[in-house]
Amino acid sequence: MYFIDNNSNRYLNYNNILKSEFSERVQKISINAGFTCPNRDGSKGVGGCTYCNNQTFSPQYCKPTKTITQQIEEGIDFFKHKYDGQVYLAYFQSYTNTYDKLDKLKKVYEEALNHPKVVGLVIGTRPDCVNDELLDYFAELSKKWYVMVEYGIESTDDRTLEFINRGHDYACAEKAIRNTAARGIRTGAHLILGLPRESRNKILNHAIKISKLPLTAIKLHQLQLIKGTQMARQYAEHPNWFKLYTAEEYIDLVIDFIELLNPKIAIERMISQSPPGFVIAPEWGLKNFEFIVKVERQMNLRNARQGRLSNGL
Image (cartoon, rainbow, N blue to C red; front, side, top):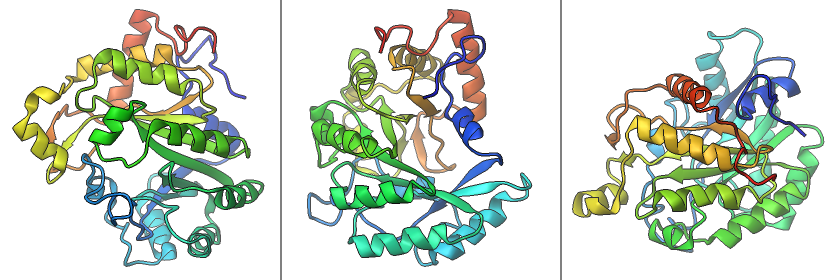
């Protein structure tokens, strides 16, 4: 178990956990294995989540027309000039990466693990797209490899989940996370802060609810309105549904969230960055590391600390 060092960091940084687990620097390589989602193919809905445009987080080398090995090789070429001697996690990121038959899933995962520079997998998926057989398989893999299953929760409010066309409720997310963690598999979650019709109190209540779950890590994302999405059209027609935070407002929101968050849950990300030309609003002009510096500076000024208000979780 990892805890915050009271003499240094004010929150549990997931990068520090990775550093403690690996002797070499670790870099994720995004992979697009050509999957879809149940709220896109008609099994639960069509159109996908209202905020989603997968192009905004898929690198140029990450194309489903290429093999898994090709994508890994091109990803390594993309990153290797920055650091010598690093190892890689194959990050199955685009769409729902457990949404297929188990034989097909095993084939793509194991092709990635066969690469000599790959030390593990990070699997991005939905909580309604895992089952016991798949989780048992991940548990076996995790005895030899680093394995993290990341679930898109996005919100803990069922009305919001319905509004953004997720196709599952929060109880489904709770069940999937508990079943995954019970097998000793590292378990992550994504939340979007600032979804339509969610008040500040409702957003902060997400921290209270997820703090009760056996999560390894969490990624927080500010709401970004992306061109070509249903949510962008909703914003054009009903801007009163939205609260688009300034960078300063969002920093304060994130810190309030962190103070309510179970201190045993590591924070992997606080904002998202979409490529230029995709974002309608908000545009802050901040890179991820610049934002983190501002958060840490403000936490120091406020004497804030992760879990300070979490009632001893």
